Image 1 (tube, rainbow, N blue to C red):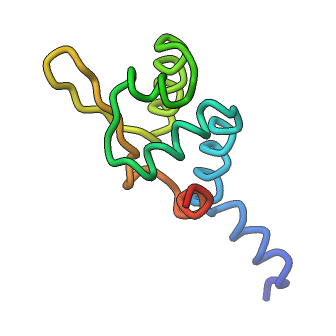
Image 2 (image 1 turned 180 degrees about the vertical axis):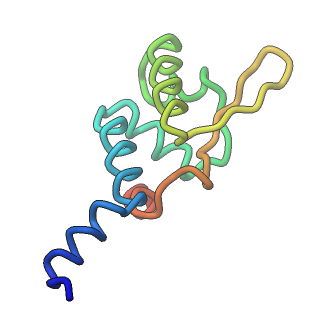
Length: 102
């Protein structure tokens, strides 16, 4: 019979949700990325230009931040003509992080 400490240790080691949240939190540790996530949590879809203006940064910086968020599956894109729209990826965001952005 395993001890309760060993069992808890195994649960923590095998918990993909905790690992996903840690990776995502590491990326949004930057103020700009956190602001972007907050905006997208409260507005279903925004262009990179609108995001840059709302966050108070350059389009280049917003675009770079969005690519980092996309790399950890936090945001998804939709292209319409030459404009790319961003939204939170509800399927990719961890429930723990979703709660933090509310």
